[in-house]
Each structure stands twice: as C-alpha cells, then as structure tokens.
Image 1 (cartoon, rainbow, N blue to C red):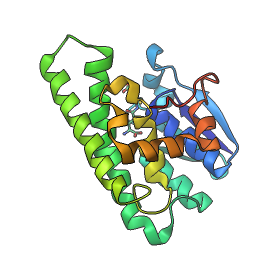
Image 2 (cartoon, rainbow, N blue to C red):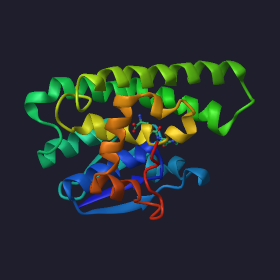
Image 3 (tube, helix red, strand yellow):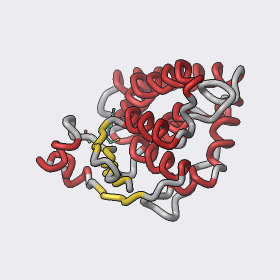
Length: 208
Ligand SMILES: N[C@@H](CCC(=O)N[C@@H](CS)C(=O)NCC(=O)O)C(=O)O
C-alpha cells in the first residue's frame, strides 16, 4: 500500500493522478501547508526540502520525495506509462517539467495570481515565460500526440496539472490548438478526473 503525503496543488495532483491511473490502493495523509506542517521534524525526515508530495511504499518501507522521482518509481513498479524503450524521450520531457515548466509557471502563479501589483518586473517576466512555455508545448504537440511521443506517459501526467491552472494564467489556452487538444483529451480520462478531485470532490478540470 502506498501512503501519499500531499496537499491540493499541481505537484500533489501529479501523484494522485498517477496512483489512480495505475489503480493502486493508496492512503492520503494531508499536509496543511498553510499551517506549516511541511516544516515538522517528522515530515522533514521524509522530505529534506520540506515539500510535498512524498510517498511511503509500505510494501517495502521505501520513502520517496520529489514528484518526478515518485512518478519514475511508480512507473517502474507498475510497468505503466514509463516504457523502457521510450525512457530517453520520457525522461527529457519529465525533466523539462521538473526544471522549467513547474518552477516557471509556479512563479507566474506567485506574481500574477497571488500577489498582483507587488512587482511589475516579476509579473511581466513570468507572464512572458509562461506564454513561451505554452508556445513551446503547443509546437511539440503539433507533431506528436503526447509529450514524449505517441503514448501517454508520466511526462504528460507531470505536466497536465500545471496546464489545468490555465484560468489563472490568462494566456488563453484556446489560442493554442494542439496544447488545448492534448489538455482536453487528458482531462477526459476517468483516472485523471478522480486524481484531480482527490481532495475536493466538487472540482472538475477546468475546460478552455
Ligand atoms: N520539485 C518539487 C517541488 C514540490 C513543491 O514545490 N511543493 C510545494 C507545493 S506545490 C510545497 O511543498 N511547498 C511548501 C514549501 O515550500 O514550504 C517536486 O516536484 O516534488
């Protein structure tokens, strides 16, 4: 059994979606970030940078932090969405999500959504970068059904929850035909809907 330590954020949703996709039984342990529960010493033992998500695999007592590493682990363990023959491509798109897409769009959330009016520089910088990410993803998805190629993989599972915040971004998902096609297609998967709603049963993936 997998125990998922998490909160209702795009990084958290990556793992609930993956667990639903592979059909694993899991137990949810909520970490309330607004109450600084991520800084409790018990949690830091599992997550050295005090971040969700983390899993404990109670089958073998392994604990794993960093959402990309968790997705790789669950992909290997289940034999799903992380095909050995496609790993070189999957790893590149997964790392692009971990190193660029998530951190940059995360800053856009901070400046544009949570703290508008505080820094013109920050707002402009991350708006521009997020717009470029939309363009770059759209260009990739013009030539390929999914990010790493023709199959749905952990790279898509890692990236999709960030685009699911498109209403906050004000970039206009409707202007990016291929990205929109990819987003809508994934948002209709039963496991994605379940994983998306894991903490809020009334929440549906927002449609463009
Ligand atoms: N690179 C990490 C990032 C995780 C992350 O940023 N988690 C945020 C929530 S989405 C968090 O735990 N923030 C709490 C904090 O920084 O105090 C991953 O992908 O797992």
